[in-house]
Each structure stands twice: as C-alpha cells, then as structure tokens.
Image (cartoon, rainbow, N blue to C red):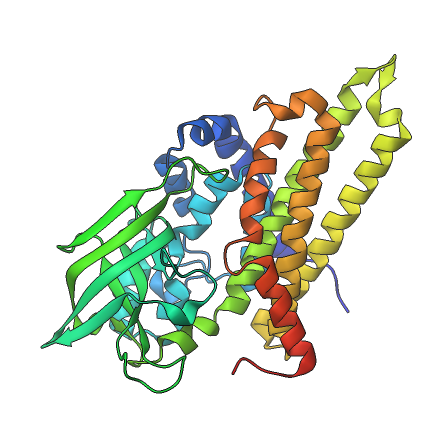
Length: 385
C-alpha cells in the first residue's frame, strides 16, 4: 500500500495553496459579507485549469484524476469555502456530458467551461423535492424538434450566474417503474421563459451563488438531450460516488483550515501569563482536531482513488467519506471557535466563517442520514432497486 502522493500531486497542492493564500484569503471576508460572486478570482482560477479540472484534455480541461481534484478542493476550502465552491462548481453537470454526451455536446458545453468562458450548473432539487430525486416534477414534453420545459428547481449552485444547466426532467410520466421516465437536458440561461432568482441570507458559503430556477415553456432543441431519453435517473446515480467524494474533500479542507487557524491562535493568545497552547485542555482539543482531520483525509483519498480504479466498495466508501468528513468539518470548526473564545464569534478571524460554512457539507449531495442509509444498504446487500 502506497500512501504517498506523486510528485505532480505535491506540486499541484503547493500551487493551489499559493493561489488560495494570495488571491482568496485577502478578500474572503469581503465576498462573504457582501454575498458577492467572485468573478475575477474565478477567472484567475480558470487560467490555472481549476474550473475545468475534471474535463478531459481534448476539450480544453486539465484532465485531472479524482484524487487530483480532491487535493484542489481540499486546499481551496481550507482558505474559504464560499469562493472555493465558486471555483470548483463551474463545471457542475459536466460529468453527465462527459459520460453520456455526444462529441458535439462535449465541444459545445465543456470547452467554454474549461477555458473560463462559461459557467455550468446542475439542476436537480426542487422546492418540494430534496433527497428523493425520483420525485422531481419538472417536465419536458417533445414538440417537433424541441423540448418544452416547465417547472422549477431550488438551491441551484450558480443559478443566477450560470450560462447553462443540466436539468433533470420528467420526460415520460407514464413510464413503468419509479426510476424510469427521467431525462437530463441542457438548458441555456438565455432561453425565453427561463428565470433565476438569487437566494440570499444563507448561513454559509455566501460567496457562492445559489438560486431558484423557473422554467415557463422554455424551448430547447432536441439535441440538448443528454444520452438516452428516459435514462436520466440512472445517469445521475452513476456520478454520485464521485460528487460525494468531492464533498468529502471539501469537508477535509474546512477541517484543515479551522484546525490550522486554531493552532495558530492558541500559540499567540496568552492567558494567565502564558500561551493558551500550554494548557492541557487546549492541547487535547488540537490533538483530536488534527487526528480527526487526518482520518477524514485518508478515507477521502481512498474513496477518490477508488473512483478512478473502479473499486467494488466505491459506493460505500464514497458515502462513508462524505458522512465522516462532513461531520469532522462541523466538529473541528466548532472546536476552533471554542479555542478562539469570544474572538471566534466575530468575523475578525476565519473560524467564524468556517463554522457557518461547514454545515452545508452535511446537507448537499445527499444528507448525512441518506449516506448512512446507503452504507447500511451496501452492508446488507440490498442494492439500490
């Protein structure tokens, strides 16, 4: 077993660290407070290949492995999760096109994202549908050579800044079987009948754009259908292992950032005539925080490796990594605030932001409760269907 990173991965980590420290850290509080999308920082990240990290080389992307992408996410999220999500989410929805799209679709939709000229999004959740993906009601009916889409989507990352979205629609309402009758269709944001309302007042990841999307007789050409009609749900399920591993990496990054901030503060803060790092209570907190973070990192890296090597335990590993790393993110951020005391309760220090940002990792891409259901299902050999 080799737990070491390859040289190119070590170099990648160092480059992303420098980028995050130089470009993100100085303005993180500003963008968080204003709930403002960081266009200029995203453009700079695109120049380094981070917006198209998972996109194949032939379409202008970096062609990085899942582990490479996890390293990028970890280092970005260790500085500011909101801006980090703005960067890594530019290619949301691209997995469906990479896996099932035509060559024309790949050229049309992937290349602009990889080159920093477009932002994508994936539109699945609805106002009344969260974890139960098979209950989406947004519909797409065929009229001639067009799809006509009606419905709404909720909590969509990049919703008001995206150029196009991979939308999960019900295309065959009379299809037999709970998981049949759904398709994924690309919808451009400049289509008539498309509207996006930015959601503000979020607990965390405020620099990242989130919106509600509405489709009122939105017409798109039939060639915007991804893969086979009626195969959308199964297409979607194939990528949850990868996306959940990505969220696990986000959790590791948040835990890392919070733990490092707490360690630095503990060394500098003095009480009762000495650094608080000299108190055993603080030492134990730091020891636990770093141990939890490292455990989450190893589980996440194993899951990332398994994505690229088709490990037969992948689904269970991805859910384990996502559930554990997100829990560690929340717990470590909480302890980091505690170590800061009153100073951790205001945005003068980054731990206040980490504390708010951490929670989302337990919610999106499947809640922690859903991850436990999946782990149990895999252990019991029950399968999805």
